[in-house]
Amino acid sequence: MTRTGCRSPVSRLPKHRKHTNSVKFDTPPTEMKRCLVKLKKMVPTIERNKKVNQLELLQHVIDYIQDLEKTLQYPEDILTSVNVSKCSSPKENQSLVHL
Image 1: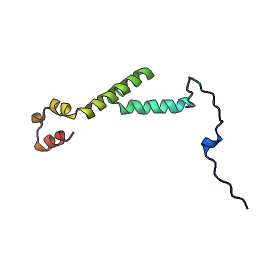
Image 2: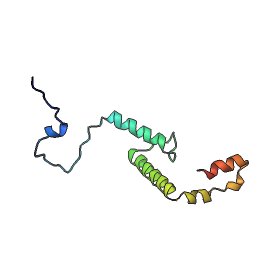
Image 3: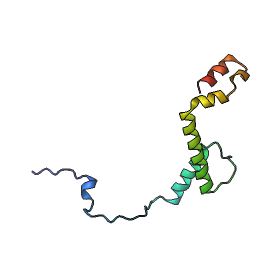
Image 4: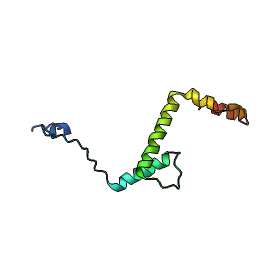
């Protein structure tokens, strides 16, 4: 009895592949729409009932990600912009300090 080895998907690729400049995605339109709806829900700068086109949505997402990156890079700027003394209880003050 001979034993056959597993062939990896890479070994089955043709030796010489033609490279194209354009990348094609086989994403069905329904899957793309579902992902865009999910993105819209995740970005708080977009009103829930407001209609936005795909380009506007992507711009909001990019802006939001940049804001998050800035917040992570400079968290002390966020803490100093929050006026902690206006909180009504010490418990609230503590939760703001740990942002």
